[in-house]
Length: 89
Image (cartoon, rainbow, N blue to C red; front, side):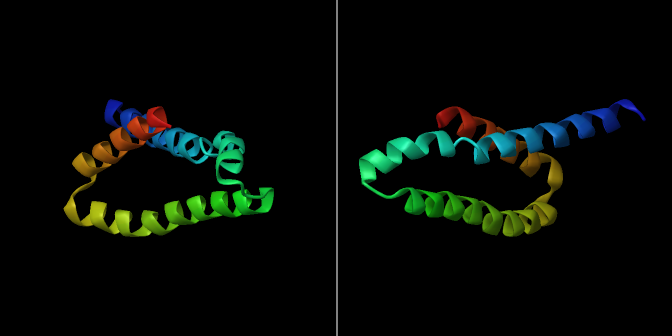
């Protein structure tokens, strides 16, 4: 494998780790949301499920947009946004 293949591999791996950390950044906040919003544990689980569903539903159109307008620039922009979003939560 050449150098660019390794870079692509590490970028894809990093994107997976970052996406997983974004998904897992919400459960630690659930006790605060339960207290502030006075919701039950069941409703907080539904809230987490809706967050995951929104991620799933936005992934497919985003894939089409990236495929249409170019992978490199939009992919890097998406990675940067995910990283910034992780630090904002």
